[in-house]
Length: 200
View 1 (spheres, rainbow, N blue to C red):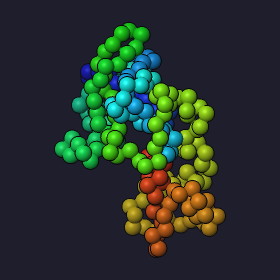
View 2 (view 1 turned 180 degrees about the vertical axis):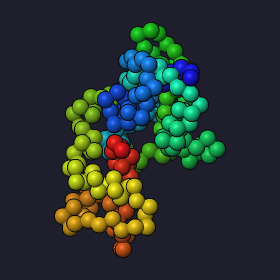
View 3 (view 1 turned 90 degrees about the vertical axis):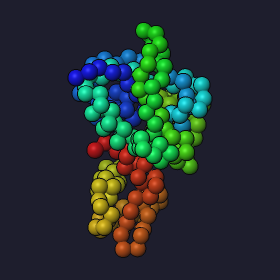
């Protein structure tokens, strides 16, 4: 087992939906910042690119794990494609991170600017925490019934029919979460984004 540094923000931060994926490996966490540009996805969570110089707040984690294995799993989760980087959803970069202890290097997952969804907007000044506090993520606004159906549809192979009642069908169509493919329903692009940010 080795230790390495990982900078996290948004859904991977402590207390957020994806933090449990790494929580067991975290030895230490401290507030820190990196430079970049922050976007708010239509689902409400932030992603960061290296296109600008805003200070982006997050946490610098000291992680104890088999670094190759854990980083490979995190790469897969973030859609990193080392053999075809242009198709990657995110890139794993080693960047300078500023914390109370000074500047040190850490891994961070930065969004591929070409893969950021059309509905994403720049968060001025990189203040994603403030934005989430005033405008909660879409996943927080869904009912349990809506979340459960999105999870069932997201986990399906795409060949089976996942039953739905008419009221829920209308709700999810109005929210642009699903598309009707005739014989079966499927998640829309936004639906896939929401599915990714629902804890499972």
